[in-house]
Length: 275
Image 1 (spheres, rainbow, N blue to C red):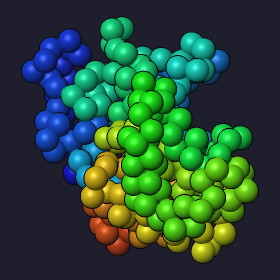
Image 2 (cartoon, one colour):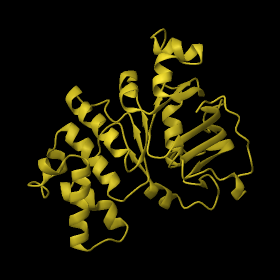
Image 3 (cartoon, rainbow, N blue to C red):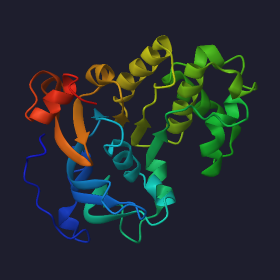
Image 4 (cartoon, rainbow, N blue to C red):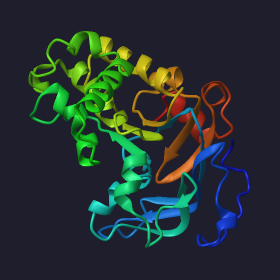
């Protein structure tokens, strides 16, 4: 996959333009994004595809647009009043998500998000994981118990938490809290998980646990991870996208990006000449 590939742009209302969701779960075509307060677009002319059951890493210097694009995929940028896609389209799971008739709540069920700083609710470990299930109308205790256990097991937290499910989640360590937030995300069975620098506030041991978890989760989910750590991107990502000044400079298999990039700007960033 390379951003130099030619992608035809069709009206978003045409079903024929829907991407092949059997292979790609996110497809961005000629997209520019603008915040109302800024004169210039935050993102310009972005073309990108994210393959199912892979990890896509976003790298680039601060302010380059990688987190802005990540938040477009579940329309978190809607909370910035006046922000909008000024051209192009973003298809997620086959749907143009910026059409007026999109159910944003349903979109966010399918596209979960894990933030830079762990944010467990001030409640028990159990209720943190069960929260989204209850919001979606699941109240049967056996169902909740099974889903809480399976989500914590999938995140490698069950053994550490099974005897303290009714204790406050805020009593967990930072790394445990972040894994709990991931468990809370996957409990509602999303198809895509967005992660915005999920290890930047963690120590190396906790970060390594999250990295191991990410590589395991791709068996069941598609993950898009923003990271400021290039070594981390090299370890966890199947594909890597490099952003600079609001533009996608290059996207390719991670090994190629880090060993033989196509663009000089990418090589300069990877080699530490700026950033």
